[in-house]
Structures are given as C-alpha cells and as structure tokens.
Length: 216
Image (cartoon, rainbow, N blue to C red; front, top):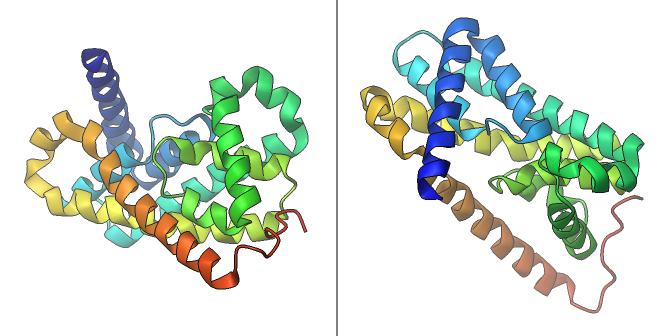
C-alpha cells in the first residue's frame, strides 16, 4: 500500500514539475485549479516546485503566490457551482470522481452545522478533504460572495506557506521530492490551530446559542 502511494506521489510530482517548467505561472494556476475540482495533483506538490523555481530565479515568489491563490479560488468556485447547480443527487452518484465522496460531504456539512460559514476559511487548510468543502457549500446554497472571500482568505496562507517552503528547500528539492507524502503534516498542524480557534470562539459565545446560519 505504501509503495503504491509513493508511486502515485512520484508520478504527480513528475507531472507538476513538467507543467510548471513548460508553462510557468499559467501552469501553476492550471494545476491548482485542477486540484480544486478533482483533488489532483494537490496544491502541495505544484507550490513546492514553483517555490523551487523561485529559488532558481525562473519565477517570482509574489507571482507564484498570486497565481496559486487565483487557481485555488477558481477551482473552489467551479466546485461550488457544481454543488450549487448539480445538487446532492449528482454528487452522491459521481462525487468520488471529484474527490467529494459522500463521507467527505457529510463531514463538511457537519462542520457547517456546528461552525457556520467560517468553516470555509479553515477548510482550506485541510489536506485532501479541502476539495470537498466547496461542493458542500454549493449544496448548502451559501452566498457565493461570502464563500469566495472566505475561500480566498483561507487559501492565501496555505498557498504562500508551501511556496515559501519550496523556495527555502532550494537545492535540496531533488531529495525532498521523494518524501513529499509527508507534507500533509504541515496542513494538519494548521488544522489543529483552526480547530482550537473554533473551540475557543464557541466557548465564548456559549454552547446554548443556535448554530450560525450558513445559507442566510
């Protein structure tokens, strides 16, 4: 199982490196946008390699962050639209193909019920499952303007963090690319911080208050 996972990860790294090397900033946007809709190749691999290109002076740090966030927001918006117009029935039949399985959608909906629209902000820091939340927001008919703002704000530290990490890795990229399956730990650390914030926020407002209305 681990060997299969490593093989898939290595293949995704190869795809990301070739696309970014050939297309530059447009390749960054395309890969991140695709990740927002189908979950592959993920945001981590493209941004790390884009950061390495900054180290090599082929791209700029500001450029890859801006185009990375743009791709992440566009991908999330497409997922939102599919959830909004396709509704639950479509996602229950085909959600697994879009990295939005019924289990992940159910998780996203529970978070919405408990924490409201702020969930979108913190969901951008959850490895793998982050792709399911925009679909759930669309199904819940969350106002798009609110969704887009929160998704963009949540994407900025995630995208920038991996971009800066890739730049700092620098010449060690070749050795790092064989261990990229561990980068999700960074996302999990951010998620823990997000959950801690939600717990503190909820304890201050009082557990007897009604949950925020996502769709209002």
